[in-house]
Amino acid sequence: MRKIILNILSVFISSVVVAQIDPALLRRTSKDTSGLLLNMDAVYNRPFLQLGKLPVALGGYAEANYQYLQEDGISEGHQFQMRRLTLFVSSSISKRIKFLSEIEFEDGTKEINIEFASVDFEFAPLLNLRSGIVMNPIGAFNQNHDGPKWEFIDRPISATQILPATWSNVGFGVFGKKSSKDWVYAYEAYLTNGFDDKIIDNAENKTFLPASKENKDRFEESFNGSPLLTGKVAVRNRKIGELGLSYMGGVYNKFEDDGLELDKKRRVNVYAIDFNSTLPKINTYINAEWAWVNVDVPETYTEQFGRKQQGGFIDFVQPVFKKPVFGFETSVINAALRLEYVDWNKGKFKSTGDNISDEVFSIVPAISWRPTAQTVIRLNYRYNWQKDILGNPPAKLAGFQFGVTTYF
Image (cartoon, rainbow, N blue to C red; front, side, top):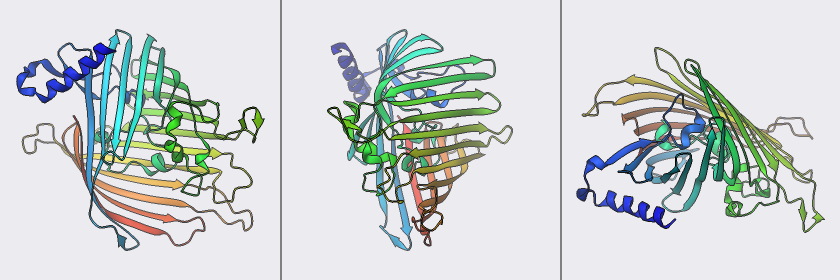
């Protein structure tokens, strides 16, 4: 451990005092570039900076943006934000043992989170062990969420308001991947600490899975002693694209305390499907995700707490200009469009039979410029219309967002 710490300090100091180092010793590395890449490979498919033959590599990304939004004619004015600063540290401990961590600073230092910190043991292509803080593989965005990979400033509403984006827990699991000509098959399965009763007892006053992220104790103990199971299977064809199916479920409530039964075991079950593809010839990139959430809500709760939720998004990204700009040889300008929908409470009122609303629609056209593949400058226009639980005329939010994000 002492040796690893000294190596990290050495790399950090050497990057600051760059004038004293031969630049030829510094090199960019990517930890997983073999074969067809899947969303599950995103954790290692990042640029890292390595000094010479040191076993530790560093990387990260930053996101900063400006926005001016109005909701029903009311605005908070011009806003400048430092959304994220994320640091990666990886190490090849031996030929078949790897360590990687991801530490994120959000909104300056308002939140500091360890989003990933695990040790991987590689036994065979189809059998690998992962232990530590793992990123639960529900959907695609939860694993493949780095800002520089997206043309949109805001993360998808479904990924942050139904699914708890960058949801990670302490646990163990296995994963594997096999390639065969134009095909690649993969799976992941983890047992981790899980949700707590915050998903129905929170400031949002509705069923809201992201509220469990407020429980920092989940990294040291389980709320109810019941593990959360998360599993995913994925397949990719070189010409067609990638399809992923995932599941996450477990008991979320405190059903007993010191042997005393408090309540029955109440489960939360989440199902998700994701797909991405690039259309041939015109190179249009399509990326979509849809999720369904089922929660066993106590009968004593009112109907504003949804027992069923669903939502998702679809992105279209079209390269429109691929030529050097201002000396950037690999410059690309993209036109993009995101369509989003979230229903926090799918069902009908028992008393009237009318639909329960509590839903939001969103459309986000965008223009982005990538001077390099690892850096993107984004201009978005966001338009949301959101209905309350009673289906009253929707609140409308609209405005511009401009931002820069880059790996470093």
